[in-house]
Amino acid sequence: MTIDGQIILVTGATSGFGRETARLAVADGARVIATGRRQERLDALQEELGTENLLPLCFDIRDHDAVADAVASIPEAWRPIDALVNNAGLALNTAKAQDVPMDEWERMIDTNIKGLIYMTRAILPEMLARDRGYILNVGSMAGNYPYPGGNVYGGSKAFVKQFSLNLRSDLLGSNIRVTNLEPGLAETEFSLVRLGDEAAADKVYEGTDPLTGEDVARCILFCLSQPPHVNINRMEIMPTCQAPAGLAIHRK
Image (cartoon, rainbow, N blue to C red; front, side):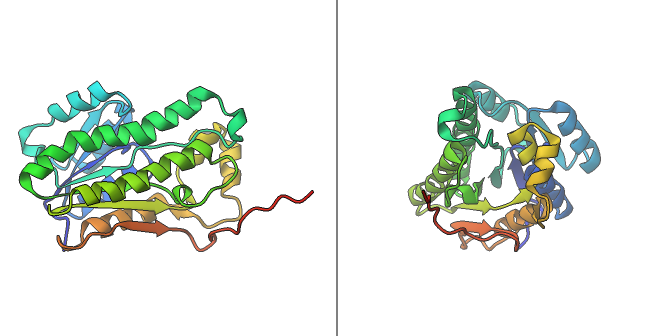
């Protein structure tokens, strides 16, 4: 199978997994609706990939009305969306739960959970009307394994995992597929956003060989290019320098 000729909507397309997914999808013959909050980056991506291949939509997925307005503004020629890649998300802070400012928790919930369900609810009805489509949610291995400082970020990605599985259950009998993609250690702008310091972000990857944005994008395209009767429920990906850790033990 191929994604040639498909229309793919990618959220969070201004950096990391989303930007690389847009690039690879266009290279494979798809047209991409790229969303994000940074207009200048969307414009640069459109200039790189071509106006016939990429449609930029600048809005904040945390804003339900902005999501509805943006989706309603999609031109007719771009409306039959074959796949929604819910990629937009972020982590903030690595402090313990009792030390994280509430506004940072709220921002993660608003982006990683609310933004994802806003986009899904906006796109799903037309997929159902056509009885075809693919919703791929970018979760995280943090939704499977706890670690100190993961608190709300990990919880939000656990929501994405369970929401994906339940969504597919609701869609049983339709030709709409749902996947939760769960990357591990990956070097993008993720740690820079989380820590707010370039030196600290670089230290996260020191001595490692992490996943890249392109690695994860290739996995996304692999899922989207499967035959229509194949549904990949979950795909967990880690670099070889990472493995699931043992349970933590505190010793006196």
